[in-house]
Length: 77
Image 1 (spheres, rainbow, N blue to C red):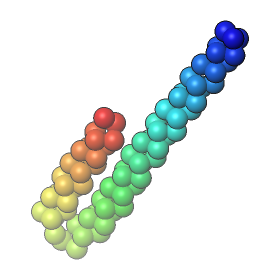
Image 2: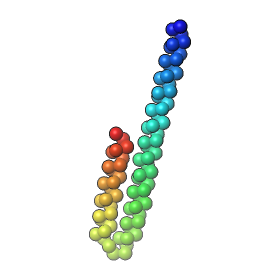
Image 3: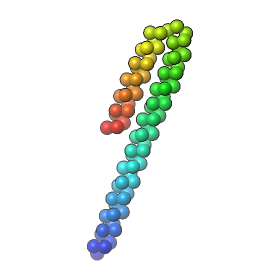
Image 4: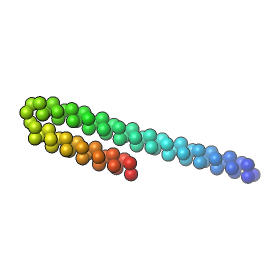
C-alpha cells in the first residue's frame, strides 16, 4: 500500500511542478509581449519626434515606461 501511495504522491508533486512551470512560462511570455508593445510604441513616438514634436515624444516615453513597469510588476506578483 505504501508503495502505491508514494508513487501517487510523486506523480502529484510532478504535476504540480509542471503546472507551476507552465504558469511561470506564461507570465514571462506576457511580460515579453508587453515589452515588445512598448518598444513598438516607442518607435512610433520616435517617428513623431522626427516631425518636431519633442515634448510629445518625451511624454509618450514616460507613459510607455510607466505602463511597462506597472504591467510587468503586476505579472510578477
